[in-house]
Length: 254
Image (cartoon, rainbow, N blue to C red):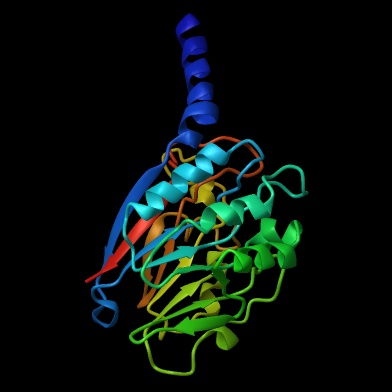
């Protein structure tokens, strides 16, 4: 009995204090001749609480160590449903301004951002040189990055977001539930929102998706439609993670 109690205490400490504060870097290689040689960093679901400046700074440092061509952010920068439960967006955006990459930093908004004032969050990000993609895109010589509005608090429009040219496209959507609307012409969709379930025994059992756990486990090639859903960085509803380490993801195309 004492062993069981001790084990439970250890599990609680691990899942509430230790694992949520671990930061891992996941490396993913994707075969794509059109995007060959490109290196991006994807990070999502930050959920930065008022006292977590140390965690935010550590995330930014980890991103910068990757020397990426572009940095893509998947939404939910703030924590909770109401202001006061999160670090203010001006402080978050200011730290994001220290992120560096060849082509810059691009972002979409998530449901928590929508609940706490999407317009203010988008404005602060833009002020700090973070380009917000809101049903639109940005194109470079050899590729484009597109992004859609959050599905839960807004009106995502994939067709409007995608470029009219034939360049390869990376699409940002806070939730993977956008996938039925994504055409095969999109090279890769990047999403978050699901947090990998936060608790995985050994896999995710409950996630906020109408498709269940289909998109909860990282990379999926669905008959040529490719999506990567990150486990994210923060927590929502319950401040716990178990067997679901916070992560940023470095994606290289070869």
